[in-house]
Image 1 (cartoon, rainbow, N blue to C red):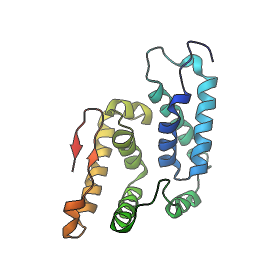
Image 2: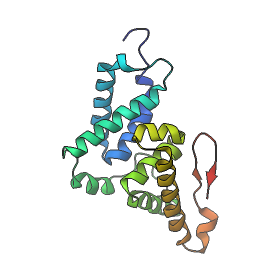
Image 3: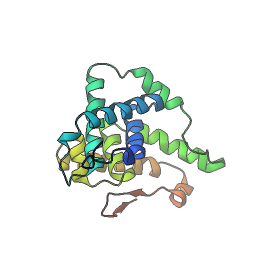
Length: 181
């Protein structure tokens, strides 16, 4: 890469997280990130100076995922495998482990579109406009998907027992710092 090429390697972790949300499979996620890096390298001349490299790379990654999904490379087996995976972090113990497992299942029960939008905005901290660019949908669609996802997770929290209110999770918004309960 030359001096004017974007620093794509510095975006590895955000890309891996997003790829894992999309694929629900660690190996498939790594393959997707590798494909995105390869395509980004091949098309580095298309990167606009001043553009956000993370948004550019996530858009590439998202497009590859959609292309693979359309061509039938992702399967229902990946869906089932994801639910059997252990989380990629140190497992908490006791009640918190149960709550995290419940929240994980609630997140996974969201539609693909809602999971994608919520991950980009709440986990990656992207703004609505950036998420819309990655997903190739209008900003209003992203806001709607995030809103429906948050409502579904709030509904999940409210259906818990009486002590759930004291231990509920906060869903954090995009760069504007808004929080949602």
